[in-house]
Length: 444
Image (cartoon, rainbow, N blue to C red; front, top):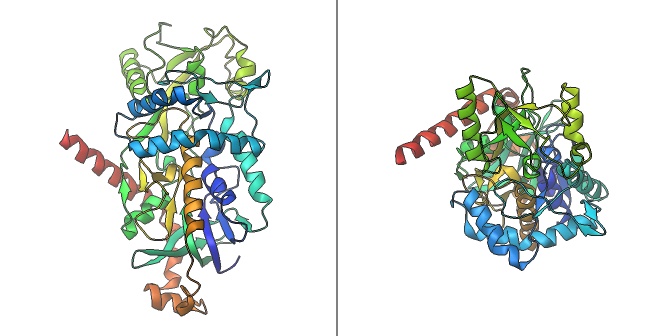
């Protein structure tokens, strides 16, 4: 590992990978992930990725996104995402991503709160398909170094300028690494919740550091609950039952087998109705039936869901399955503009880590992968457009611990304590989210 890079990317999901692929080949890039390459939430996205089918779909796509977000979305961000969508899809196809087709034409499915079919998909593992293909492309680039089991414990910053990242390496060592620009693409906050569809190591590290260093946050109380995850008594990551299942015709049933809701309501509204029904029935879950899907074999359309449910003792071709809402997605985050720039110089953020305003108060299904890709690309292009200052770090050379301590005003050895602070950071984040909830409740 070098002491200095052109760009450091924290996270190896779709946002981090797409950014790396749009940076110049002349850049030295470091990408890090807290866990293995396969353990990013990008791998878990089941349903699909939205795309503007044609210009006639623009108004509908825009309105569906705004309505789902309770019109709290930033209109310019929604517009940019939609208008950039076809180019992004074409790039994914060029990278070898395989979307479902029939007779050479792409197939589109529909999910809740969409007024038409505009979602491309790969079986029920779209995120995995996209992320694997992008990772494979990144791994071929000689200018990109990938480090697994490497954790960001702080950033190097002074005078509202980000100069690099403090890392805990796989062997437990603490080291400082400089960069002309840093991109946070390190996922959401599911790890601070007991019931979540996210990987548990995604604990909102970028948000904790933003609170510490005064970096602007936005809408940190906007937490999306997914209405249908597979119920289990075990304390583990909840398995997602994709919205596509309901989009294709599956129905929700109460304890007596009666349908009680419109399954295509936006996620937040559907979640409320499920909670009400569970309280009314005195149960810990409701039932989901796929027997109403007659157009195709659900085992072929949803092979991953079929396999997982079978492992849990449920055959989706003839059994109802128990489902319950769980924390799923984070609409708030580190505030960024259209180029994914944060309020700190030389620091960018994209993907679920950031809030660019696309999702408003509630994310429209299958907009997450698209939003991550569009704005990660914007971040990369913006970085590449800036003239770098070759003398920027010259006053710190050689990059010794003593030089760092004198410049940034900390004792380098103290950073070893940061590896013990995750529980504290989780609690701080929870309190801040609750504080923001309370404030907005009072405003109402």
